[in-house]
Image 1: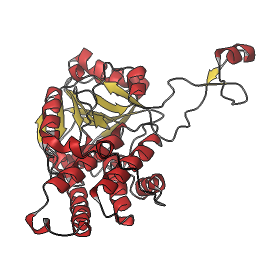
Image 2: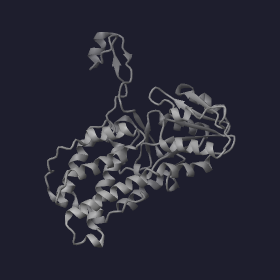
Image 3: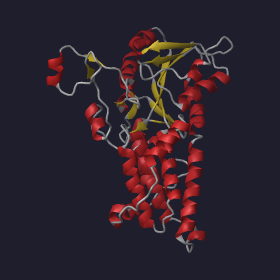
Image 4: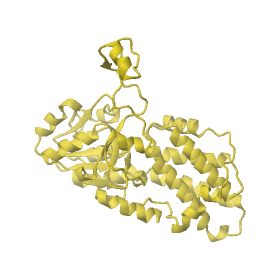
Length: 360
């Protein structure tokens, strides 16, 4: 259950904009620009919270007078925001939560607002939404405390990609004088080691730190007897599978082969009501993720558009990755030991139950 966010009644769908047939009000607010500005100003802000923050600002900048207009505007601008992203899955976790929160707030308004005009209810909604954002930002610190029992003395912690919960867990363990054999951050072209973790690798800290290239990760894992993986998740899907940085799925297979626990740290507001049938690129595409698996360029750096063009140009080589957003893959639930959230530890199979509690 997401803290600070009320669960909507089961009749919430009757208030959907499509049911009310309300056309979206016009607005000059550029939600995509605001989202990009928000994430640039605070790179550590999770995508779902940045999306909610953008929708809150949208409502603040557009003083509407009816519930139907508010829902229609929110739904339309949500579509605009999601369609602007190569990977809309993390954002959709936040936008769906906010949509349901609006509906539940209208249906279960406080008694002192029963006879108030819509502007008062709208102000109450905006203030409570900002309170939710503030509380949600504390989740990574709570997750760090739940991670500590899994980290034993003289063990090796392997991590990959960067996230606030992982970084805080490592720094918290350092401050509490845990003694590791080492912390190994697996690096790749798209997932460099966060500078804040590098800064802890000094002679004055008890955190021995090593960088391991992705290609040599299996060698590093095989040389340690007691290890565990703790990785960040971008989103958790309804079947318990996890959307994370490209390469995470292969690391999970590696961990399974060596019998190593494989944990994800993730805030509960990243749970998404989406049920993929598999874990391949086609499943990501069905969830509107746009990312090329392979791109080829000629000797002049031009990207080829067809197999015929490739054959005419002769031998091709993989071009550099220039996408601004990092690529992702899906790690299936059966390769995941547990999910560590701000509310405690749960199995991947429990995600669907949590979503049912939240939405119904």
